[in-house]
Image (tube, rainbow, N blue to C red; front, side):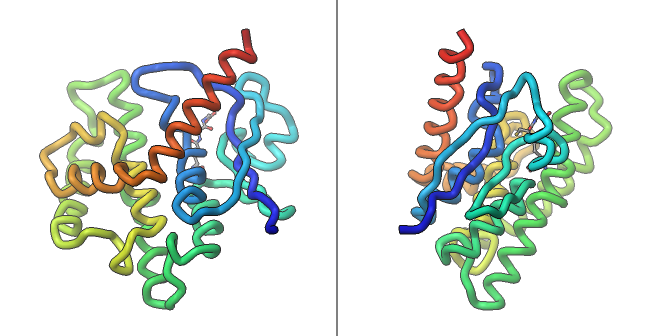
Length: 215
Ligand SMILES: N[C@@H](CCC(=O)N[C@@H](CS)C(=O)NCC(=O)O)C(=O)O
C-alpha cells in the first residue's frame, strides 16, 4: 500500500462570514485528493505561534504545504500540479492535455487570482471606489467568453485547472461582481462535485476540532 500524503494546514482559524473557514487553501489539496481517490491525512501547524519548523517548510509562514514520501511542496498551485501527476482524473497524461492543464492552472493563479485577491483586500476598506475594479471585470469578461464556449477549461475534461479556477472564483464578493452567467454556472457546476463537498466538510470539521482543543 502506498504511504498517505500529508496535507498541512493551520490547527485553527477564526470564524467569520464569509471565511476564512471553508476558504483556507488546504481545501484545494483535499479536493484534489478526493477527486483522484488519493489517500491523505491532514496535520496542523499552529495558527498563532508560527515556528521555525513551519517557516522551513513554507517560507512565508502560510498554509498549505504538502508532504509526499519525504518531499515537501509549498504553494497550493505547485501542490496541485504535484498531485495532478498522480492521476489522469486531475490532468491527462497526453502532452496536449497536459499543456492545456498547465496553462489554465497558471492562468487561474497568475491572471485571475492575482487580480481578485488584491481587489478583495482593497474592498475591505474601500468598497465604493476600488481602483482594481475595472481591471478585474475586464479579466472576468474575457474568462466569461471562454466559459461560454466550453464546459471545462482544459483538455475537454475536469482537471486541477477547473478545481483551482472555481476555488478562486467562488469567493462570495468575486461571485457577486459584474454579470457573468457562464462563470456563475461554471462555478456552481464545479463546486457541486461530491469531492468538493467532502473537502469542504473535512476542513470545517478540522477547524471545529481546533475550537474544542483551544478551549
Ligand atoms: N500563494 C499561496 C497563498 C497561501 C495563503 O494565502 N494561505 C493563507 C491561508 S489560505 C495563509 O496562510 N494565511 C496566513 C498568512 O498569510 O499569514 C498559496 O497558494 O499557497
